[in-house]
Length: 187
Image (cartoon, rainbow, N blue to C red; front, side):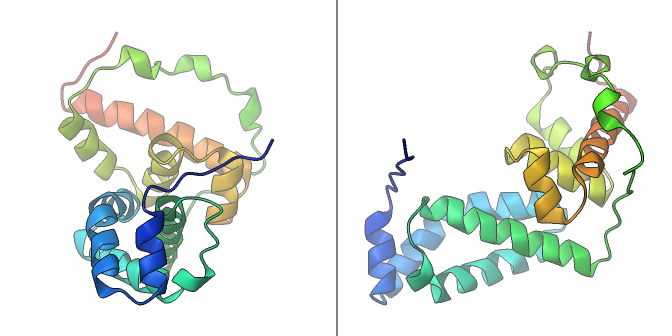
């Protein structure tokens, strides 16, 4: 059975296709904060995230006629934001450590804490995530916060699935260390 997407902003998208500046503005108001947060989680730089946000909206509005509404406008825009954010990171020459020779599947996840067991204040976790190196932060954000799996992350970042998994596991370990160093403990 085929998935059906119900886009609550379908009318605004149609108005945008017809050139309505008000519809452009309304869509921007609806999505800009969430899309900025996505760019910020990937880039960890306010100015770059703002630039990516603006470029993404300009790109989306200029290509709105190509939007086939197979997904929601928000999902389509999110993909644009993520792609542009990752391109910006590449411009910074972000390095992901390749460990293709490591068998990541043999490393058990049981060494890590379950997320249900951890209760942190949102600001402390956000600050700790921002302290992660770019490669770790991007994979962790795409996996945990954006809901991508390792196969999708490997395509987005042009890395192997093993590298994605290892970056994620290293990011979790590093995040736990950062949180311990600022006095947050867990059972």
